[in-house]
Length: 119
Image (cartoon, rainbow, N blue to C red; front, side, top):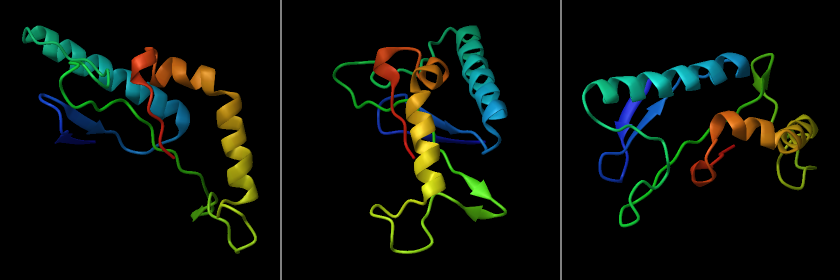
């Protein structure tokens, strides 16, 4: 886990270690709740909304996704035949992410103003 300051006042990023999806979802919820509980105990407010104050810089909650098989990144096409540089497996994986996006958002961005998803 890493912690560093973001651009907005009082904003920090917590980067959790990569792991299998089911463990990553648990880690996200545990980390979010732990930060919220510690802040609350100190009389502070911890939130993961991307823009807490309208006059300040926003950040947000985001997820980085990678897909590996036998130690190789399978998102990247191995030749130049791909129009966008993504492998067939990568394209199929992303199609699944898009198909299941409503379910994924329930965990990663339960509030409408909290959605940023990076790949």
